Image 1 (cartoon, rainbow over the protein chains, first blue to last red):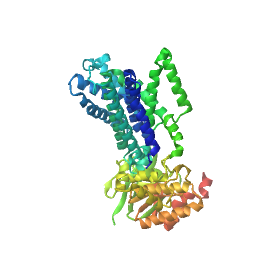
Image 2: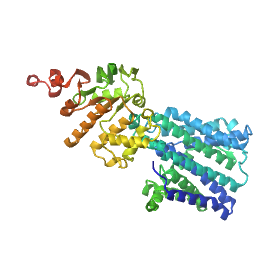
Image 3: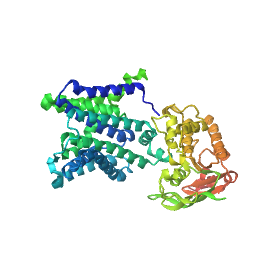
Length: 309
Length: 247
């Protein structure tokens, strides 16, 4: 299949090295915290890109899986007082469960139904959090989670390692025969059927994989914030993730991860601009998406490294 | 000899329009049968019913002794019935090898080890050998038809349905493609059902013809008989002049 060239591996190692060492040289808990959130967004964006970027079925409710993972961590910590490390596998299982629940009835459909169903499902869950406030803490959410790792820098490295694993696993899958099938589904479902391929199975399976990583990211976020609240389910989170993928270059996975890190950093750096922050941020995005409809990160990287391939 | 395919009283209605009406026929193993009929006679609809792309309104379709009429298209392919499309539908953005590789991943293709080797072999078999890395977008129509056939062959079909394989091809492309289809029928022990408009190529290939008009099967027989059948002549050439005069 498509080969990963040496230059990609070298570039990846360089980026990870910069990310890992930045908080060592600029010793500030603030920067470490910001980078932790950046890297978690990287997990969310690359997991979205795996399913939606490859199959072309846009998921407008990725926050459903993110929130499900985060609340799983929240419930385990505040109701059952379990070892916080159980959160991670539990979050993956619950997020995958939700993906099957939504995927089975909707991924058989064509057109915008899947996008709409995901959007509504995440909105419904956000609503349910408010309705069942006795259990979910309502607007305030659940707080008092234990950190997984007490040292912020060590936790950041742990989260970064998870992002690296996420990107490697999803990239290998995307470049395997499996990924070829997902790209074929984006091309023409009828032809896939004529080729004897169970299209629905592959779409649901890829959504489940995407959801599992998103849920894992959700739990990591919960154990960073040490609390969870309903906005995690909001459409704002879903749309932010989608924009990150588009800026990264859809279907590239590593592009989504890097764009997520850069855009999250950008929002933080613009804090100094006060109320103009959203203006600048939105304008930057509009310019990128208008002039570079194929995205910025992955196409740029491919262009820069063309002669080394 | 057992029938490979039995179509029994199959009807498809779209609202008030009956596209296929009480179609009944059988295909024997190893047969090369053609479906002939003017535009809108219901040939492609019949293909879509057989391959599960549309459910029939009524009737039964039995393939290798198993009822097919409620199965999804990919399941039917994995039971041994593969098709090509009249308007070729390759996966754009992929090269020729990848296009065939997708079908090599179907359960029936049953390639355990080297799927790419199998895909390369299939390309060779349809006369596209050594061109696996070419993008599909720049491929001429005749080669796209070959690619469709390679994709269908990847699923190891017992019955191959070809929907107008010669449509839109120049005369220099038709003859070699006809030779390819003939060779596959002979060497791969394939049963073939083919829809075609181009009478000359058609009659030279098939051993039996099913003629459709306005959704109904109006004649079945060997080609030499079919060309003399008055109902067929009427459907194709129209009524004789006195019918015009009275209209």
